[in-house]
Every structure is written in structure tokens, then in C-alpha cells.
Length: 236
Image (cartoon, rainbow, N blue to C red):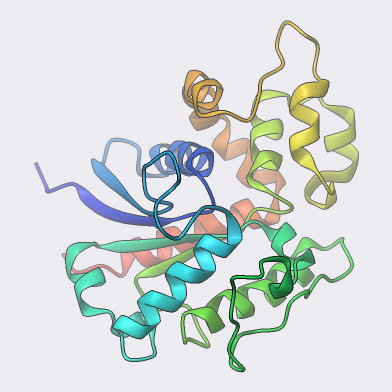
């Protein structure tokens, strides 16, 4: 049996990991893999960098420093992991650096906000991808790095997976401004919360639904395609 695929994950929060892991289980089928979540760290306070998009920002900036200005040159990171997944929800395009007074953006950091008209979702995600890569000191995604950018948030994929008949999600799709709000608007007997416990309870359903989600949402399909391309490019 081959060694497990070693995947590093940088994400906004712990629930995002559960959804991404379900997608990977669908894509990798029987191939073993392990995920190490580098950001946020697994503690009550989510480690020294905090959670959310600002935690991703801080992690990327630190990784770029370790690589003398470029994430792709962080030798230890890619020596210890086969692939790096960078997650950022597309609604970060609405944010401003000044939303967090502790941030000290540099001139080379991409501009926020960078929201574009939706549909298509790709107008905004293309702009936000450039911002995310600027935090990493890159202009293009490194060969062993894959961007995961759900529109408008990971909860769009959760709602589409668990509540495929949700009419509001069906109408708005990837342009629904706040997909998380749909979790609590389902019939009481089936509604869930955005929590690790509830997401873990439904992880098998999230995995089973991934092909349908990727067939419906462009950003899910983009993640799938780019992940499989990066996987194919690995040695051996």
C-alpha cells in the first residue's frame, strides 16, 4: 500500500475542514490521505493567528516570509506535505483590511474590497484569488498549492448537499449572499447549525453529494479540477 497523501490545510475555520475533507474523500475514493490543519490551529482560541479570513492573511504573510518573500519557496512546508490547500470564502471580497485594526497591510497586498457583479461568481473569485496570492508573494498558484474558494461561503456547498430542494438556494446559487442563513431556515426536524458536531454528523452525506455539488457550482468544480491536476503533477 502506498503512503498516505499528505495534505496541509489553511482555512478560515474548523467547519470548513470538515466540508473540504468530505470533498477529498469523494475525489480520492480509496486512496489514503491525512490532513494537517495548519491554520487555524486546533485550540479554543484557534492559535496565535486567530480564525477567519484575517487568520488566513496572517498565515500567508508568515509563510511568505519563511520563503524569502514567496510561499512557493517555503521549503519546509512542501518538504513535509505533498499538497497545500488554501481556503478562503468568496465573501471576503466584501471585506476591508481596516475591519481588523491589528492588520498592517503592505503595499504589495491586493486591494480589498474586490467584489464584482454576480453572476458569474468567477468575476469575484478571480479578483479575490489574486488578492490571496498577493498575501503569499505569488502571482500564480504554486504547483503544489490548490485554492478552495466557495462562493459565497462553504455553507453554499453544505446547503446544496444536505438540502438540495432549498428553493432560495436553487434560485440564487453561488450568488446567494449569506448561505449560512439557510441552515436554520429548514424544517425543524432536519435543520442543522454551523457547528463541528452537526457537520461531522453529516460528513458521509457531504461526501456522497460532492459530485452533484461540483456539477452545479462553478467554484466547486474549479476546486475539483485544480486539485486533480495538482495531484497528477506529484512525483510517483
